[in-house]
Image (cartoon, rainbow, N blue to C red; front, side, top):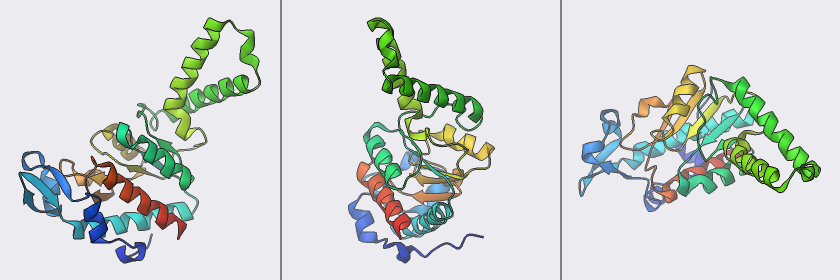
Length: 231
């Protein structure tokens, strides 16, 4: 049994969460019924997330993430929104974990052997390029290969070294990347996720009630993950 750390162990401050915009949910008409327990009120027809409860849930998630990584297990970061793709990559590289930040490819978990074959093909293309072996092809053929490599980089660049399924995934927008969650649940992979007001928090084993649209909100949570892992 994993012993979860208290939220204060991770330096979580309500004031900083507020400044980062974690409290702003969606319009009251779009709030998911299961999120009502995490709502403290409304302002201008927008639901406000209870940051006390959010801090508690964030602390639980950080404790789980710290345990996962410190025990040598794999955490996959998933965040495919354009405005946060660089944050996802930078955070994953900092904690030395795999990531997907462009597009979730169907079958990444449920058809993992096929995904691995495509990754090996991509690695082989990169090796040939590095050795100058692509120079024997025509300019048109090289351009086609370069485009293919670029597409493969978008799909597999962040999981090139992921030799087996992860033990947990952290999903930064559970609505946009719902397929990742569905595949994870099929394979028995634990799910940590930011749960905005329009999302069912029960989709995640460790939901973090917070704004998933603002880059500042996502960055705050990703920064806390980095801090937790370093402790």
